[in-house]
Structures are given as C-alpha cells and as structure tokens.
Image (cartoon, rainbow, N blue to C red; front, side, top):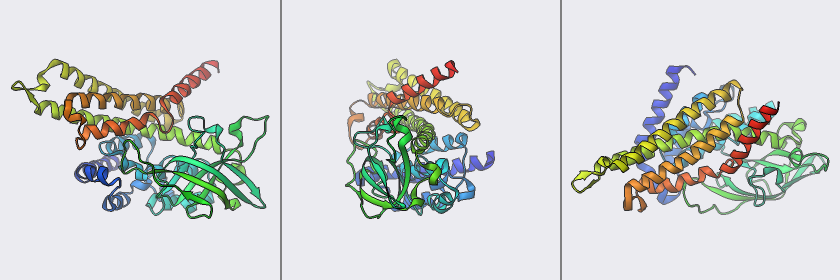
Length: 386
C-alpha cells in the first residue's frame, strides 16, 4: 500500500471511529454487544482482513502500516477492534504462520471478508502464562484425531465459526513439553465442542470471551494445521502469532492513551473551581504533561518496534517490550484521567471511568507484563551470549 492509499484508509477509519463508533460507546457498554450496523460497516471497510495478504482477499498491511491503523482503532471502545482482531491476529496468523496452502486458500478469504469469525484456543484453566503446560489432548483414532480438554477466556468464542485449538499430541520425556503441542482447525458445531456462557468481565463490554469444552471432538487429518509437517509445531506457531499480536496491542494502547489525553485536557479546560479552569493549576498541568509525554513515547516505541518486525531484525524482544511499556503506560494515563476528573471520573457513564476498567486487561492478555519481562530479559541475554 502506498503512502496515499494508507493515508486515505486511516482517514476513513478515523472518521468512522469518531463519527459512528464513539456515539455508540454507551450503547455498547449497556448491551455488552457491538451493534449489527457497526459490524457490517467493519466488513464493508475490509477491517476483518487488514493483516491478511491480498492474495487471500485481505488488505495485507505491513506491521508498520498496521500499528498506524491500530492507533486509530484505539480511540474508542476496545470491543470494536476485538470483533475482527482475532481474524487478523492470533487466530488468522495461525494459518499464515503454520497452515498448508490448501488450508490458507480455504479459510483466509472467508476470514478476510468477515464471513467467518475465528478464535484462538490456547489458554486453559491450568495453562495461562505457561502455555507449554496445556493439558488438552489429541489422540489418534485411525486416520482421525480425538480432542479432549477445556480452554478458558477464549475471545469471540460465542461468535466463532472456527477454532484454532492447541492440543498435546506427544509426551516424549526426552523433549521439552512445548515440542509435543500441535494446532488443529475445528469448526464450530463439531459434535463434542461446547461453548459455555460468556464471561462477565470488569471491562471491555462488547468483547465476548468464554470457556470452550472439547469432549472427544473428532476431526480429520486435514484439520492438523500444517498437515503432517505441523505435528509438534503448534507451540512455535502460537509464539509467533503472539509476537505479532503483542505489537498490535501495544499500538492499540497508544490510541487509547491518546483518547484519554484528549478527555483529560478537555475536562480540565472546561471544569472550573474558584472561578477559574482547573487546567490553570500547576499540579493538574503536571499530570497532563506526564500523560502527553508517555503517550508520545509509546507511539515512537511502537513505530520503531514495527519497523524491526517488518525487516526481521527483531521479531521477539521488540514486540514484547512495546507491549510491556504501552500496556503499563495506558494504565497510568487512565489513572491520571480519572484523577483529573475527580469524583466525576468515578461515575458510570463518564468515558474515563469506562476506559479505566477497559485498559486493565491489556496488562494481562496475550502475555502478562511479567511474561513480557521474561521474554525481554531472556531474549536480550541470549543475544549477548551468541
């Protein structure tokens, strides 16, 4: 995509977010759902396939281009991005990173158009941060596979048409646990696959998660992602998908931080105490200054990390460092926004109260801040050792 095309796309998304989605934020919060009119508009704009290559029906944004889009999407409720985020991110990338050409041809165009919604089923009740400890199993049954286990906190599970399920296919004591994990493509409605009632979360209304139970789910050999060569490679595929997703989440945090800056500046300029705007008070100015500074630092950080991801010079530490910094940063900016609003910032219906709850999740999913610290430190030390 050339610079003019990207600029036009970002401008169109910016108008859509601010003119259509922002006015619907209260509706999304109250109904815990994205209105159908917004879902349709997202499909029409190609947002279900922005990161899927053009040869498979998507827009094919590079990481550098994608983070600019994510920063625009971050201006509003994170549920907007969540509805199509897994198609482009951790679920769609399972096929991009590990799928056979036949699997890509069959599924990616449907993901890109929004005909199909995909879910990434990795996390389990006893395997969150340490995905290599997952216990869902896939055992051979003739030329088929039987999958049994439970997945937890699976984004878009109640809406999903297909699940990228990670399961243990081997237990060789001489190999690391991660080497015995494979990925399977399991359509919704397959006998034995049951999606539980959706979770009731602290924030991010409209973004649905739920447990997924698999009880002897039978799938054919073509369901093994990557075919025979994909056996035992599921963990590697998952980590590559998460690295890409972390970069995207970092950019989303920057977009939300910018919205929070706008909210606190607008409020401080208009709210009067003692006959003058609270924006004239130096301690309020200090909080605004800190928020602006951290947001600008996050934006620069994300752009640099995206460039390293695209040229292949840093596909692990950079995304983790960006996600770690930006997810922590947006939490601090949200806290200051509530503080500047005072009592009003603690009242339901005020945007900063909602965002304060929404942003808390960014420090947890797609790898907690503590996991990012480990990835950053181990990657840096390994580079020195080599």
